[in-house]
Image 1 (cartoon, helix red, strand yellow):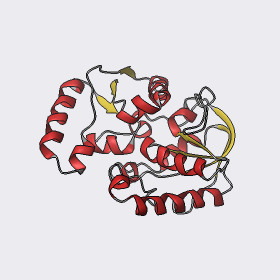
Image 2 (cartoon, rainbow, N blue to C red; image 1 turned 180 degrees about the horizontal axis):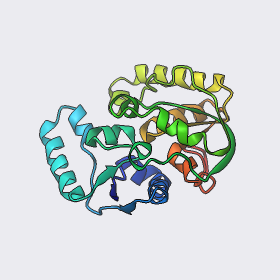
Image 3 (cartoon, rainbow, N blue to C red; image 1 turned 30 degrees about the vertical axis):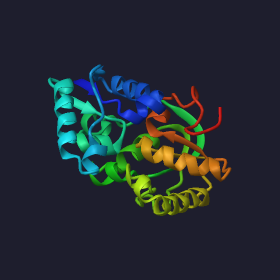
Image 4 (tube, rainbow, N blue to C red; image 1 turned 90 degrees about the vertical axis):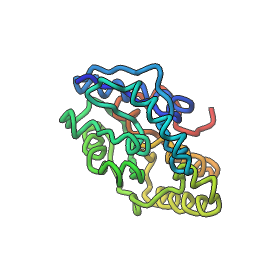
Length: 223
């Protein structure tokens, strides 16, 4: 399969290792991966803010950049939902990864990945193959963390209450780390985790599956 990686804005600017991890996983699954240079934002912020003309202009650029590929993969539920892409497990038939991590983790289901793409069992299936890793299911795993793109900017008080509740649920599991597939959610959760001084690592699931989690500190952690 000839696959194009849609890097996403947040990965490009805040956590490039997620992009490298996604490439590694796709190549391990037998894909030929390319990263088109002229890619831009998916247009979701403009679309959600009512700027349909701007979103359309961005979408046309995306069409041009990703034309001719068998699949487009994005390591973000919200961006993938905007592009209607598909997840690794369903397309490549990948059932396990050669990774290890001695951690007790919990998993947050990002809204877009869960509701727009139907991604729930797939990451858990792959995580179950990681040597030394155990999963504690998160109460309210399907409840929004409060990020929601521009939602957290428009309604900061509501957003803060939601992420506060989310972090309390994470702490209640006793997990040493929380994973998710959307960097927006992870940045939001990490901010609250570290402001509260909690000893919980926050990481993108792709980094763990690709064994890249030991190369960089957890998301949001002081360096």
